[in-house]
Length: 308
Image (cartoon, rainbow, N blue to C red; front, side, top):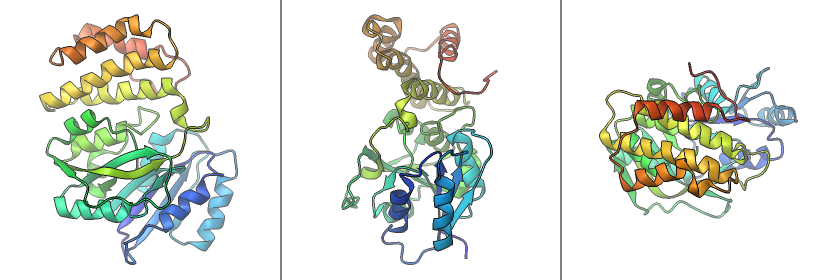
């Protein structure tokens, strides 16, 4: 029987976190015997993540493990997981995070009720084991998904996407190392409608040195290019362009701020950010945009491919 849900997880040195993550997924409520599969793609871990997953797979045949001999990053690996998925719906997750226990059922219900092929909820750092998604919470249905996703600045996994929409969109943009923003944006750009429940569905672990989110330079670099590549699409709405442009300005100055630059609030990136907030209809000239690209490409301690 074809699985209803394929959970997609990328793994890099998550030996300590995997037991709780797997338990969380195995304990999702309200699925009433629906077929599910758990696809773990290891990105060349140096700890015992693979050994642990093999032990778990021997106990649960729904667990599938894909091993790799080269570290390529989460964008490449989440797409690899999707290629091995056979579910009607996909739920991508980071291997150290959690879904609220009724999260899968809630996302499925909203997809059915709204006809949306892409359903998001809120994310929150921390994890409350007894928490449930409030199914009476407001649900927004957006008919311009890219504009809505860019405005909400959705930067997390733990959402539901129809597998056909994933294939149409091509998944995460592999030019960008971290998938947290490129994936929601690329899926939104290909969707006809998006649904968003205004309650917490996805729980993020507290930040540690093992989290990619600890590298703020990488985060802002990837956010900049995620927005830029969508801005380059033809046929997107004016509202989408405006919201993506806002992210470009925001990522530039927050890069300085989060790296502890004392003059961040007196810098040109901050002043440009404020000007954009006050005059959101203003456009970025191509000359300025090329300067911003070179500026981001000059950043050190980030992983990227050549964009040329």
